[in-house]
Length: 517
Image (tube, rainbow, N blue to C red; front, side, top):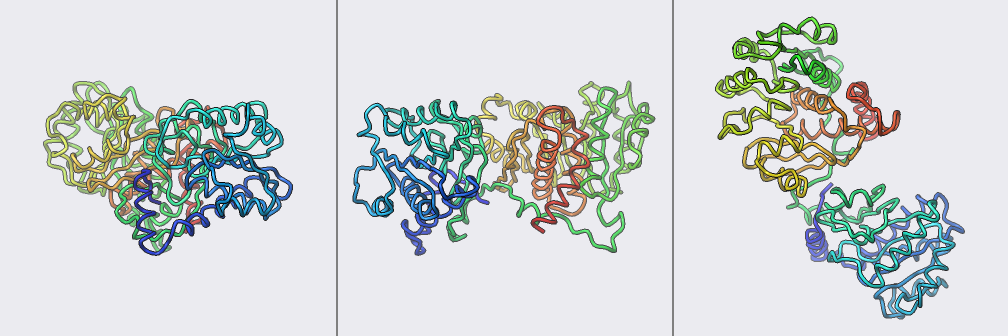
């Protein structure tokens, strides 16, 4: 699903118009789709009271169409108009013919009529601005939304629904006006907007629903940013033929672990197994072998020379001999930052390795400051930094990275020529060719140590099964996020640990195959 800026959405609509889809047709489709979603949210329509805040532009027009349909379905609808002066406009006349009560905000002294409408409303539909030009909320618009927010605080059961985008949320950046209420649901039309998946705006959208306007695919063909969806993820799932054997599903070699980070290596190996890899081998410090072996009964083991529990220069020499027997190398989870590991990493970079690679955690930290390090990695490499690691690799401040995650990831994936996974809420996956995919998940349940190791293992396991680096990273991120949602459903947002995700990865795969396969 394409993810767009406000300008891109306008261009798509203009192209659709040139192909025969005029504004009135799009408005009718948008309003009907929004009305259906409001009715679904209310559970039953007859007798329910819906207040529609109608702004001056096309978003307000969509709201009037939605109001008409809701009235036809038995809802008790009222309209509160702001900046919409013509009482004879056709969309408003259709509502007036249905005896829908309405008021103009500019004529409502002390917002008395608004107060009466709000007092009995079951839901408020914000159709003020949508993706029109972002502006600070001022004057009457601000006062109305503040009054709605006050009512919501008094009556938490009042449903606040945004049409296309909450008023006061920047559709491109996610910046948020202080007067914007926190909505229960946002019903976005056409294509989702970037600002809905960036904080602080994302904290005010509530659940996001989509209305398909039937826009021609060619109208958005040049948009290189997409939101990952269940349908898309299901298409990426590797096949599981009945006559397969373990060799059919790839071999993953995981070079990981140190005396401080035993769990990281185990989580990475099991992450690869849980997405369907056929064989996973752990190459880890020899002095810690007995600990790893007791926690990893399914993996095979390649004990490596170490110094004080850390991978040494001789460890790379031993590892390099084994790499050709595997499909993918996952390197970095829990290897630590000791000086001896730096020598191990230098030997790795000097080796000219061609094998597909997933590079994570301290494997990335050891690259920071090495000039031209990206040119010494295999072409088929996936880098999985969190924002702190990204800051060390790029020299950018964390605030710069978090302020424009999509474009930062796109820029450095192109510069480095590698697939880049910028982890965090709404994880970004960027290809060297400029394509970007965004995870739809922002889940505090995943904010615990070790979840990144599970993700790295999942990406490696999918890469071993024949997916391209970009697709393996995208599907791995989606399955990881879906596992987090399943964990939140079962446990809650606090208390989820990384190992909770492992049995939920195959459950997520099963869900995708069942619902969207």
